[in-house]
Image (cartoon, helix red, strand yellow):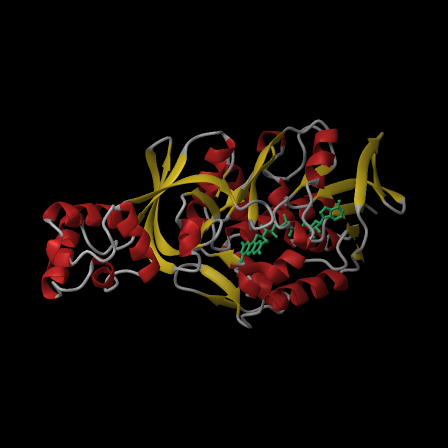
Length: 406
Ligand SMILES: Cc1cc2nc3c(=O)[nH]c(=O)nc-3n(C[C@H](O)[C@H](O)[C@H](O)COP(=O)(O)OP(=O)(O)OC[C@H]3O[C@@H](n4cnc5c(N)ncnc54)[C@H](O)[C@@H]3O)c2cc1C
């Protein structure tokens, strides 16, 4: 009988354990938290955006995003939906491809997965931190803080450093490095951004919808429309999370990063000039601040006027066309320099990780060490927001599990 150790009881580790155990292998999961699947429980604001029906390599970043293609084909959405039914989980499929458990509760995902894993006889050892993995002849030795055991195969499914409060560690990188694997520099992703401006802290708590353009070394990269939320440290919101992978990667490489906010994306520039002119003409006695509050949140108006060097209480009748154009320009392209991300503690995922060049994407086995496997976020693959990160964790875990059991 094959003896398999899985390091990490997260999404990819649980999936791998299930598929490995179904081949008849003897499987042990080591998890240093007091329970498995903590990120599953915290995911999707407690709802778990479990997969996306439309996933392709274009939804991922890394040195070689096409690495995911084989895994996504093996675990395509239809396969996954059937699999979910087989473990008692019904999915709620949204129009844009995101899927959630029908219960709308992440707990359902963990309950279904954990009970399927337990039924196969997998041993789950919690409160058990793996501190070293070595290989002697053809056997792996897995060492925890308490004891050591030998295995035929080992899967490193330790995830990334994102959200350490949920148990994330960088241990997988240390283990992989010790076996000669290259680790690409890691960086927080799906994360809030820090801004360099004196006014953003004063707008903390203000939420609006904007079109956000990301500039790297002054070149426009991505445009996303969605919620933004000013915060004491900078800016958050779904639109910011959506540009954060590219922004964070650029910051890692010491590039200049900035964002431009279009606060009224429904209007073209000339149209916006007309809208402001009409507004001012209809209320000529109002001051600039009061007048613009008809278009934008009040706190934003305060600092837009400051940046436009227009006194708040100037009557709109005394503003000229140049002032109106200046305001329209700022509303359409309010620029902020991005100095940093809000860090791994607040990130949902991490970019970088174990180089895909040294992993066989059809088996998830190391190309350097026979019998050593990788799955999930520890690999240099990071997905967009929308269920893509779990998608790759399930897919890579399933492949590794099946292969290890062969
Ligand atoms: C707040 C939040 C919300 C998210 N929401 C979504 C979402 O809705 N949809 C989506 O697709 N993705 C989401 N993600 C991302 C998703 O959770 C991860 O991409 C996914 O969990 C990765 O799976 P994994 O198995 O690679 O790692 P993990 O799920 O992180 O599992 C790794 C496990 O290894 C354990 N471990 C680490 N080191 C050791 C060690 N030395 N010894 C023993 N155990 C160890 C950890 O405790 C952990 O349990 C979210 C992430 C966060 C933080």
